[in-house]
Image (cartoon, rainbow, N blue to C red):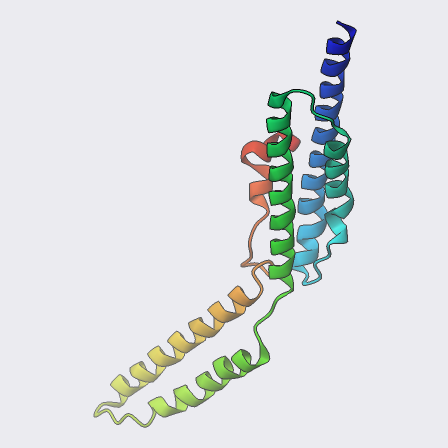
Length: 172
C-alpha cells in the first residue's frame, strides 16, 4: 500500500515538474527565441535550459508497469519531436539565399525589365502598360524571394501565435 501511494505521489511530482519545464520552454520560445529570430540572431541557448530540464525530468522517471512504459516511450518520443522542431526552426532562421541565387534573382530583374522595351508596340500606352506589368511581376517575385529568405524576420514573418493557442494555451 505504501508503495502504491509512493508511486502515485511520484507520478504527480514528475507530471508537475514536467509541466513546469514545458511551461518555461514555451515562454522562452515566445518571449526570448522568437524576438532573436525576428532580429536575425537565432540562438540555441535561448531555450536549451528549459528543454534540458524537461529531458531531465523524464530521465529521472523509472516506469514500473507496461502501461507506464508505453506512456514513458510516447512522452520521450514527443519531447524528441519538440527538440527536432526546435532545431529545424533555428536552422531555417539562420539560412539565407545563396549568393549565386541572389545574383540570379536581382540580375535577372535588371536584364529583364530593359528587354521589355525592345518589344515594339504600336501604341506607347500599351507598351508602357506591358513594361509596368512585367516590372510589377518581377518586383513582387523579388519581394517573395526576400520574404521567403527570412521567414522569421520582419513584419511579414511567421508568428509565434500557435504557442499561445490550442494545447499550449494553458501555459498562458
